[in-house]
Amino acid sequence: MGLGLKREKLGDILDCVTPQIILCSNNISEYIIQNFTKAGQVNFECSVVNSFEAPVQLPEMITATVASLRLDSIIAEGFSLSRTKAAEAIKHGIVYVNWTLTASPSKDIKEGDNITFRGMGKIRLKEISGLSRKGRTFIVIEKFG
Image (cartoon, rainbow, N blue to C red; front, side, top):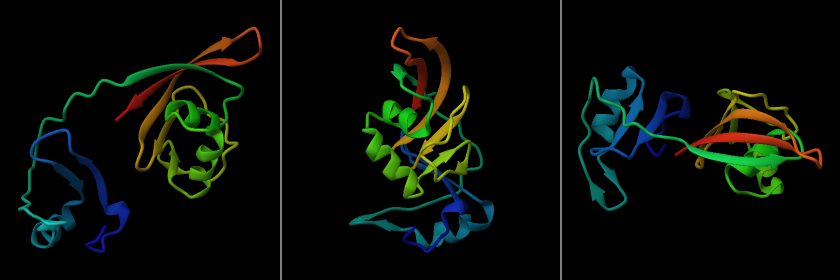
C-alpha cells in the first residue's frame, strides 16, 4: 500500500511459502518489481512467477452455539472476539460477506457464506446443525489462516 496502489489491484500475500508470493494484476507487476525493493530495513528483489503450486491449507473447524445467525455473532465465534468488537470491525468497513463489503452487523448469515475479516483471516459458515434446549443454534465454522 506504501507504493500508492489501490487495494483492489492486490490479492493475498502468501507468506506460508518461501519465497513469499504477492498475487496481483498483470498490469501492475512490472511496477511492483521496479519499486518494491525494501520493507523496513530489509532489501529484497521481486520477480514474476507465472505459476506456482498453492500450499494446501487445512481449515480449523470451530463448533459453537450462537443466539442468532447475525454477522457479528458469527465473527465473534470465528475469531474469538466479543460481539461489540466484531460489530465495530463491521462498521469500520473491514468485513466482507461473499466478497462484498458489508456494513450491517445484523446481516443474517446463511450456510456456505464466506466471511473475510481484513487482517484476521477468512471463515466459512459450514453447517447449521439445529437448536439447543435453550434455543441457541449449533454451528460449525471453517477458519482459514
